[in-house]
Image (cartoon, rainbow over all chains, first blue to last red; front, side, top):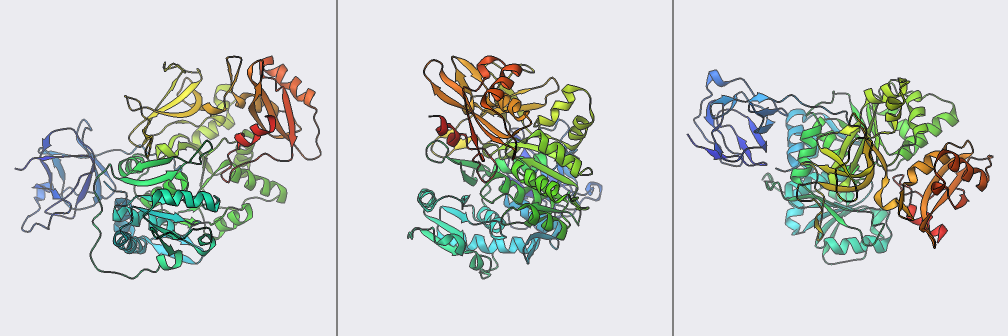
Length: 105
Length: 496
């Protein structure tokens, strides 16, 4: 499977659901970023056909939530929700608990 | 990474929700995005290096901000209160540019071939111009917003905020779609101020309806809040002071049942004002927000619980927190002395800040961050043992008397404690013996009186003799800028 460098600011989309993400922060190196069991592609890439969502990886993504790996070295912002589960090198990402500040503006 | 993602997400999740209300105009998030798309096409076709705005609050401000982001062109809102000479100088620095303005200000402009002027009404009714969606620039280092500083010393500096700075601030401090369907925030800060930029970005990300006001006036603000069932507001201290004064003079209650949260910042809040405001709005959550242009807005907040705890406490260390700007938000803060040594709790020095939202960068001057990424705010202050930050004025305002650093703030606090004193500013004055001496401009309450000797004696009793103002002048009012910052450079001229 294809490994991709994840740079802060890069945007990706799922090939099997509507999910789109933006990289907020990422460790150096190349990783297998998937959604719903299939590799993600660049957000501006032409729509890829034929992918099917793996039912075991359909835990859904929610717009506005941040997804992180165990040590929080990777953080993705979901900019569009979908049905697939996000995973990094085969491990499902978790929703980051927001540190919500009182509204200042 | 591009701040246009903020509007994309709001339009995606709550396209039908009203995003902007301005007089009789209303835009849903979907309509706001469509208007920003059209603006982006127009900006791209212009070949401009900048998108400038010279106008009061209107839907054109968010449309131009997001439109510029979609087009990948820096957005530069200008201060419409500047003189024509100052405005035209700034325009020369951003040419070639597209300038969105209104008839109120177009008379101030010199005609230039490299500034394409679009009237606000025309800008808000641009033709569709094609189905192609803009593909925003993804470079996180691209410049999103450029703001000219007020330029109290010399030419205004061009502070730049990159997409990564503003996105870090929003994603790090605001919960997406946190607002309820009925929530609304009233926006009174002008579009050229960092608080005006962050109001648009935060409100859009929270999917909170913005109610725009062109100008601030206490009675009109109360009316606007009532008519629009406003739940949230941001005010600079002078605005809150005027609202408090208005309510006290009228002897009336605010009668704003929908108002839940009131944030303030942009200058020092007098303790008497916030204390009175908390009495007038007992159910409202108050938040003090401290931030700078160069830090993409808020870096520290004193939250509602801190306000209530301070007001209710009999412990002086907790009580005084009402005068604090709170704890760091999504950044780190440290205090250093003049030699760069990091100071401990309760030790006053210079405030440094570090974090992804901190740009600390000016065009042509470059980055002001040190090797470890810390930005010198040039504010003075200290942290208490629990990490609450207290500010003590600008480093530039410190009076150096015979090698001793004197902060105007502590003297001002003492003078404000005199029952006859309504307002005061302490500044440096030239002194042959000491290099600099202490001077004070004092405004007395109407009908009240106090002598120079009496005020000097008050300071001598509470502080050291070196703090006693050697000159005191009485004024009818102190000079303030439109956002409530006292203009010390003008007061200093009184004592030259």
